[in-house]
Image (cartoon, rainbow, N blue to C red; front, side, top):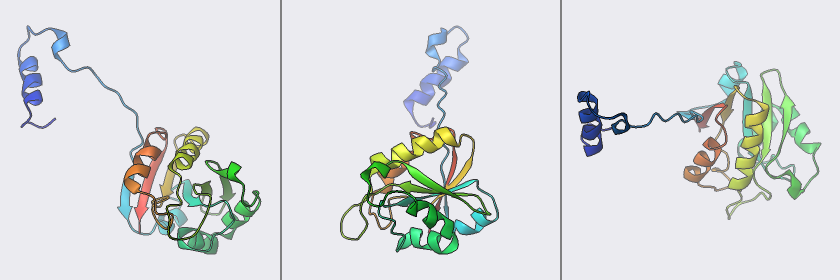
Length: 180
């Protein structure tokens, strides 16, 4: 609360007066949410140092790790692309789900956050991102997760909409977002 706000002064007056009824005090609000931290820098180095349990990145449904962040994942961790290729190519049923690969540094999650790939239009599906993270929250409670700004790069999604969608379904994950 800001000391400049009238609401602040109201609550301070309530606290100063011992004869005020309890309803004068604000109700205790406990809200569990993911505390998404945003850091500028390369997420591959801290992942390689095992500072995180999971690395999650967005994928399309056509096994195309040819550009952007996915291309780097394919180069550094080919087992992530191999895991993706074990799923049906071009299947819409993959949206909002994920494949995963065990690596020497941790688990890489290929989150199916867009159906198509390519340039020009918005390809990210915020609903699929939200569904995928809800699944991850159930499967990996308490884990430390590193992510890029999923859906906000080549897929052209709006990070200001994507971030709260992820936060709304990940109360049990410790997520750090790396901004390249």
